[in-house]
Image 1 (cartoon, helix red, strand yellow):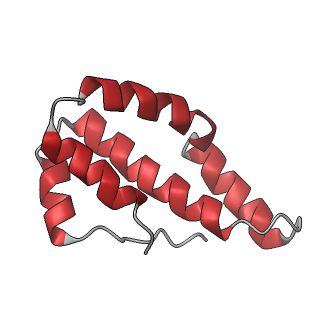
Image 2: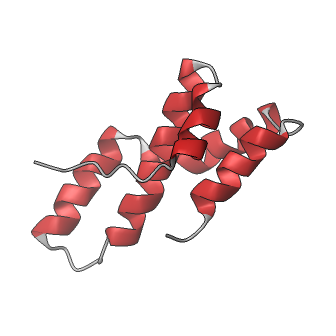
Image 3: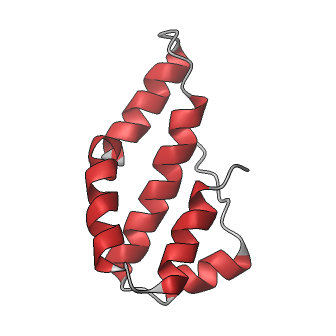
Amino acid sequence: MMVIPAFTTPALAASKNALPKEDQQFLKRYELCDHFAGEFNGDRSERDAELNREMAKLRCGSIDQEEKAFRKKYAHNKKVMATLIQLDAPY
């Protein structure tokens, strides 16, 4: 069973909660896909297989294209852009 981490800070969660549910879900997927990609070793281990399964469930293969559309949609919303910057920041 895969444990899904919860990294979001309270301030980041508040700004995400102000968005439509569909966009909140995208940001959660974005955060998880980024996290899981960082755990991938490329050694074909059982852990990599587990990560691949989770990333497939999250549809991480399309996240970059979806991110572009999301950024375009919210280009003039400083709070949302700040949220993306926080999600991109290293832990």
